[in-house]
Image (cartoon, rainbow, N blue to C red; front, top):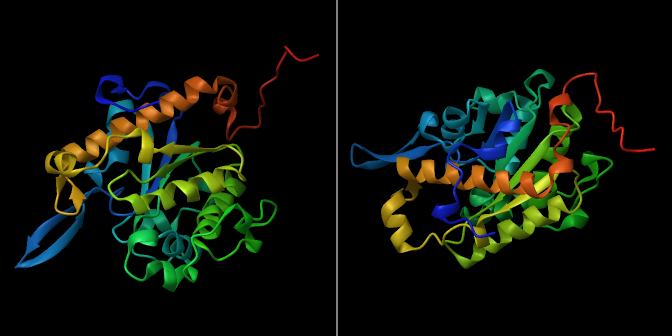
Length: 264
């Protein structure tokens, strides 16, 4: 596919078939900025600048941002289950009346690259498709893949027909390939999951890219807008390549079903 600036969908394209979207992630999804806090580095989750909220403004889609700085899949699952974390939206993630038509999930940066997190939270195991029990999320392994998949499976209980777009981390370091491998493992088992392979398809997040779109270890406002363009463009591409898999999204959350008159 190759997401390059000449191909970007600035209006969202076919992502507009969804009316409600949930964005799950860490500081790179929460619109976090670094600032000078009396000589120390402070971190500010500026949600209005997040790529999810940029998508909301550009398309008119209702977007809920389930993210905050430092979040991991393990912590997200814990917060949403116990409903006592620092972010009220994350606490409500598994509530039936908060279900969405689509979810864009960008987890893994802190799980895979955070110092000691993989060992502490997942016993050092990234995991494979074998860590997912499709029939019962309670039987998933406690690996990164197992916990990540469990979040999706819990959301599927509330909205079985929801679509899930799993964002693989971009190529700013070779180790990020583990994020793509994890997303591919999940999508190979769970239905209606699609991988956004930013590792191969987005521009390389090299020094020149970071000079333009980053401030410190996080994106600047332009970087979050560009990320929104990349995500919308990729989702538009997926929908256009698989139209029959998305033709019935309007019926989600209703008692009605599409009647295919072309079948005998």
